Length: 121
Image 1: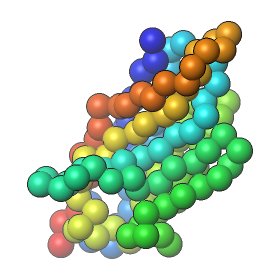
Image 2: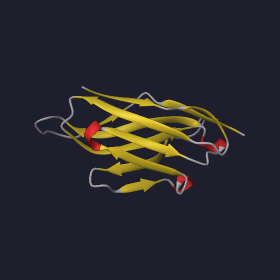
Image 3: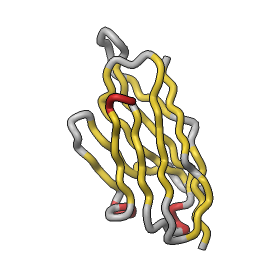
Image 4: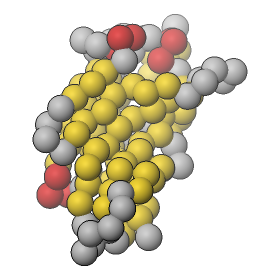
């Protein structure tokens, strides 16, 4: 089994910063990609940022220039540095990872429980 644990959420004023962390643990052979999603009340879940094993990175247009995703492969950890936060960034942020078990086999997608980020105006 694989578990993803997020941390770093909280409440911040507009213009402030937060750093989210997500650690993958358990039966991990290879991590193909890690990503952050968010879901605001009444809205669909959206991809915020993703980082691939080879280093490829993607961001949602709404966060480009403000958010930075990074990864520590040795620790199976991904970070999301969020700067210049806006009230519309308020959401539950969830970590996701595509992981292959030790010894090979199919990759599977795993999700964390999510962490609340609230940006006050």
